[in-house]
Length: 297
Length: 297
Picture 1 (cartoon, rainbow over the protein chains, first blue to last red):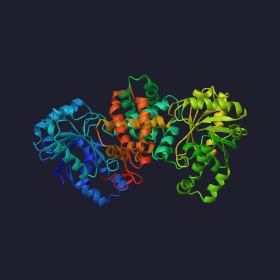
Picture 2: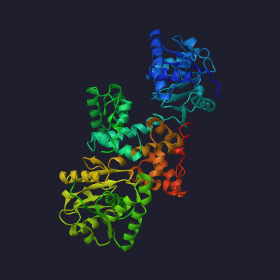
Picture 3: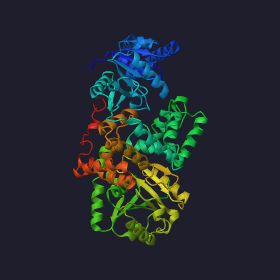
Picture 4: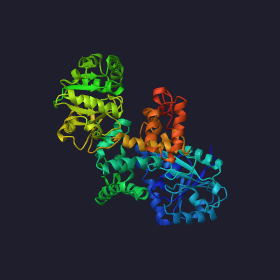
């Protein structure tokens, strides 16, 4: 058991609200902080909207869901939000200036004991460690969307992170139902995106260079690996806009990637964004690759 | 229905014997050719040894397996082997000089009607098209190990392959129970290895650069993708020697790949070759990643 009982989640967006509710669902006292009353109201709405998913996907009862809600409070007062926090999980927008400002403000009001953890997808902890006033108590704790199902928590310290703090966060991740994914060093993209990006890139290149069709490429992977999803089902899951942005950042200078970026852009312009828009490489909610005959033809 | 009823499989090694038996199992008349009587006897033994797998994995009865055997003949006489062949599937050793010689000899004895298909893993069809005397009737037809389960057949023509011949081989693949994977152009590695190599490389790099442990990396992928295998389970399946050889060929000049090659080499030197030796990243036949608790901790 860790000593972490009071948790503050800063930022009640899509993932922040999931992190907050999952932590509360597992019995911690959770305060959700966001920047103003409207944002707080939106966060509370998002949390309440999770009820159906918890009931459907992990068979939670209404009573269990309600017990989780009782562990939650919401505020736009940062001082009050962190006054007694053992841990602040930061899930605010992925803009460096916003994060620098937030950690600078947080450092002034949080008690010395408070551990800070960033859910940042793209920045390693050393980026903001200097703003925290406590680099030894700062690390990244990165969750996946649909936290109640995709229950990995990637844990990455900087060279300054105290190993005891790292271990405590590993235990905390288990306490809130996560499988801790321990990184020994800073790695942009953590483990998952470090696997996913080359994999999606390789599939995307076969398609963009007209070697094979998306369905054919997905079938090949699904049969050979016994996997429920091939690379294009994953493009749809990640979302074509996100995939496009990441590939442009990583491969924008690579002339080999140009046809892939052009083809993704054309789909995005047609509104084929993946699962979120109901259509990408497949049609949702019943995508072709889930048809039992998909692997037979 | 294709007009392909008489099939010759040249080379009765591990994959050649599987291709021959699967084709016979699906009702084609199949002749297995190998270079001498010893090789032919070994091929016949390999084919007979498939009985248990067909019974266990696809619930074939003894009668069904025996019916397949009745469609097979074995010979070391190339002339006799191909005298009436509609299709020759070449599954001989992956050495260019051996393949050049084989196609040159085959071209002299095969009837004009015969289609030639190479199971080569590493050479695109244009490499040998000039030896065949019939580049328009030559293409690659690439199978996976454990053909009765991993039933993909990757089909790749050269620019000289007649589209009608290509289509006939697509239909033939279906007739023998394969899912045809159609490539529109030559691509070294086909679809599967074009996905697999960057994926295994990405996982391998995380391990070799001490970012995370193999089990942790596999867990991350398995949870996020709902997949039964992560990259290190795949290393074990492919075999560490094969993986080492491919990575050296593709990435031997990349200093980033050096630690990965060194760590694979050390395991190979210890006899940890993957599934084939009973130990690689996991222990077989009951690897740790298949334990139901593997994804819980």
